[in-house]
Each structure stands twice: as C-alpha cells, then as structure tokens.
Length: 112
Image (cartoon, rainbow, N blue to C red):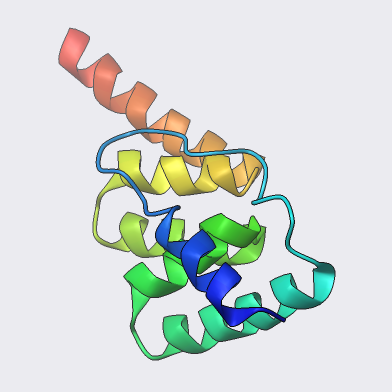
C-alpha cells in the first residue's frame, strides 16, 4: 500500500461546511485491502474521539457504518441537518427518514 497516495487522497477529500452531500461513491483507485486498512484506522480514530479525522477517512472510503456513526454524533448534538448529510452519504434510509420526520414536524409547528 502506498501511504503517500492514501495521504494525498485523504487531504483532497475534506468535508465542506454546510449541508452538502459530498458523494455517493468512495474514491476510486483504492483496493479493498486499502479500504479495510483505512476503515480500521478510522474506527480507531473514532473511538479515540478524533471524529474529524475519522470522518475524512469514512467519506474517502465510503464506509457507510462509520458515516452513520458520525451522523449519530451530530444527532446527539441536536444538529439534525448535519446528521442528515452523513445519513445520506451512508445511504441509511431509516435514519434519514427519522430526520425528515423531525424536520416535517418542526415545519408543521411553525406553520400553525
């Protein structure tokens, strides 16, 4: 595995601010082995509380479980729109639907 290639790939895929769906597809050119190594590293970083670094890895590899866990962190911080972004990236329909319902109920209250 070429570590310089992986580092440059990660650097090029930082998460922009705001509600932007970054990608549906992981970075092309990473082998299954490279993705597995990166996902393990991302899980270690996540467990150490280094969420930004873990998130960059999960977005780069398209690791849906990791992306959903990032979304869960934002939900706990009451940042539903940011959470929704990560649930969409993870293609997690159940969690996305729950956020949609929350947003719809807020809009309904505002319209009364």
